[in-house]
Length: 122
Image 1 (cartoon, rainbow, N blue to C red):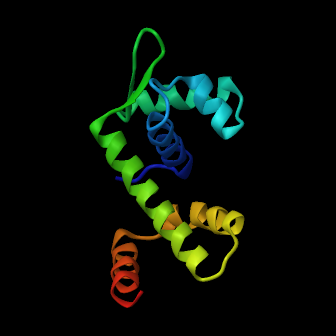
Image 2 (image 1 turned 90 degrees about the vertical axis):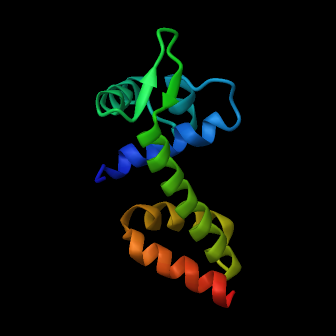
């Protein structure tokens, strides 16, 4: 499963929004990411064509199983790295920015090794 960072960010954003909103629409994603609605519409078309989301006739966006798997993976990494960096004394804003970078580029093996080490050694 190899998708672009931007697609991962969109999927993660849909997941996060779905936790607080009754339904997710393109306009919600555009507002959350401060992107133009036209840019989000193009991205949603690509995600839909690749089977990561479904879009209803009313414009409601839902993650498919594969989209939800990717979103959950990215969200878990973001939360882990953000919290870990804050525990190390990094301010919250920097920790979140750095977590956004780290979450996309680390292999699953390296992430699992770091997570296991941190859990074991505090």
